[in-house]
Image (cartoon, rainbow, N blue to C red):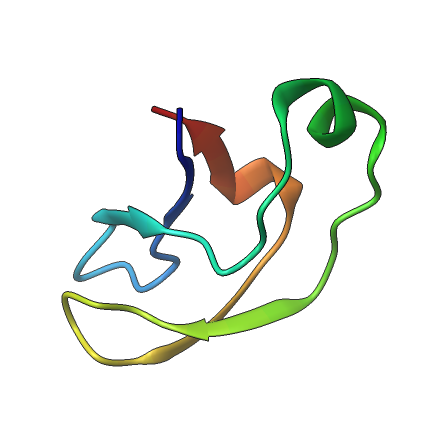
Length: 56
């Protein structure tokens, strides 16, 4: 499974792989806030947190 980010740009909202690599157990206990990454779809630099992430 891959940890995915949901783009926070309201005009995009597409998913792409996160640079953060964790297993599901570690993800459940991790504190993940204010991370930045460029969306692979809209090319905007976004800030995201655990609420904008999911496993696929």
